[in-house]
Image 1 (cartoon, rainbow, N blue to C red):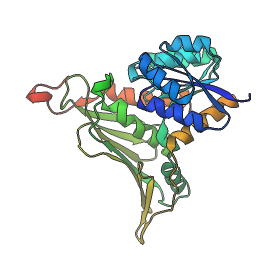
Image 2 (cartoon, one colour):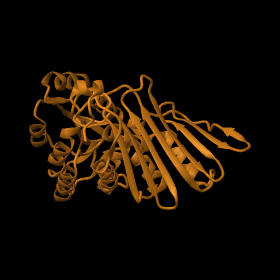
Image 3 (cartoon, helix red, strand yellow):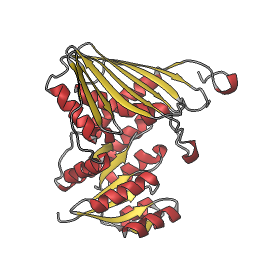
Image 4 (tube, rainbow, N blue to C red):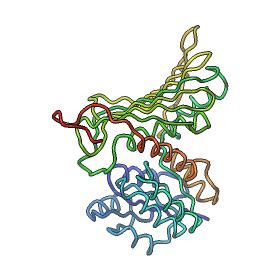
Length: 322
C-alpha cells in the first residue's frame, strides 16, 4: 500500500481537527469528507483539498477509501462506523463509540464481516503525559497501586449540538478506559451514582466507584456544571503517588522525600492517535486498542448506568428521573 486514502465523516470542530492531522501525516492522502450539513462539508473540503459529500454512504460507495474517521454526534457513531467497517474500510470511531449494547454488537458484527480494523477514539491513551505516567507505574515507582482517581469537570452540556447522551458516556468513559488500560484489568464491579441537576433527560453529574482485582479502588468524578475545567488523574500506591494534568501533560511523582516533575515534551494526542490508527490499517494489524478493548470499557459503563443510583433533585426543585 502506497499512500493511504482516508476520509472524515463529520465536519464539526473535531472532524476538522481530524482532517488537519491527516493532511500532516506522512503517507496519507485526505481524499474526501462528508457531513449531512453540506456547507460544513464543502468548507472543510475546500480548506484541505478533499472532495465533499453530504451523504456519508455515497462517499463510502464512490471513493476507494482505506480508512475513515467517524466524528459524528454520539447517537450516530456506531451506525456510521458499521457502514464503513462492513465495506472493509478501517475505522477510527470517536468516543463513546456506541450508546447502547445493541449498537456495540452491530458494530462488532460489521467489523467481522468486513474484516476491518476498528480503533476507538480513546484519545487520552495517546497523551504523552499519560504514557509517562503509565511507564512510572510499570517501573514500580509508586509501589503497589491501591487507589486511582480521575476527575473531569466543566461547563459543557453539548445540548446545542443535540448530543443524546449524559455526562457518563461523554466524560466518565475517558477515565474508565484510562483506568482499565493503566491497571491492565477490568473491574469486578462498578457502582454509579448520578444526578439530573439541570435536566430531566440526561444525567449531568456522575460518580463511579470501581472495584478492581488486587484490592484497587477506582473513582471517577464527572460533571457538566462546574464553571472551571479540570482534567486530572491521580494514582496512589504503597510507595508514593503520581498525578497527571491531561491538558498541560504535566506529570508529578510524589514520594515521602519530595516531588519530582519529569521533563516531558508536549505532543498533540490526536496526532499520536491517528498515527497509530493509520499504521494498523496500513499493516492490516489487529490493534491492542481496538474494538475488543472498547467493548470491555463500554460494557462496564453500561452496567454501571443500568444499575445507577439517582441522587438529588431535578431542575427547579422537581423530582429527578427514577
